[in-house]
Length: 171
Image 1 (cartoon, rainbow, N blue to C red):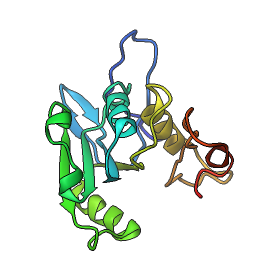
Image 2: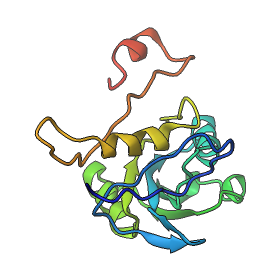
Image 3: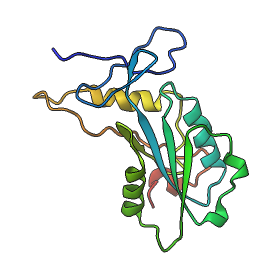
């Protein structure tokens, strides 16, 4: 059986353990093997939902190593408003440089983590277990022992959204 290494996360009550995925790179920190996780977010005109997203990322049981922001149009960025976010780095793009796939690809290029979590700027985690649960999904095996390469989470509609957005969130 493969060796299962504990991943480092804020284990406040000591009752939960999350196990690392065999075969990935691990870094030694405080005498433990640590898998790194970056969150990558393309942003355009950040608003209160984006601020809430950053707050919820700080509360995760598995705290991201870095939060890589790909911001479109520097004039819309409020540097003072997001100054105290640990591990956040911002890369500014013009509207002309933005491309949905290309911008995410560029963000991935900036990341050096073992796991990359791609989010949108309005996808606020419902609780503090989003990253933990996504990593658990990567531990699973397929019916014939296949390794899981991708995990995802459903984006719930905002409480104040219009009915059409709740029914069809990508319109």
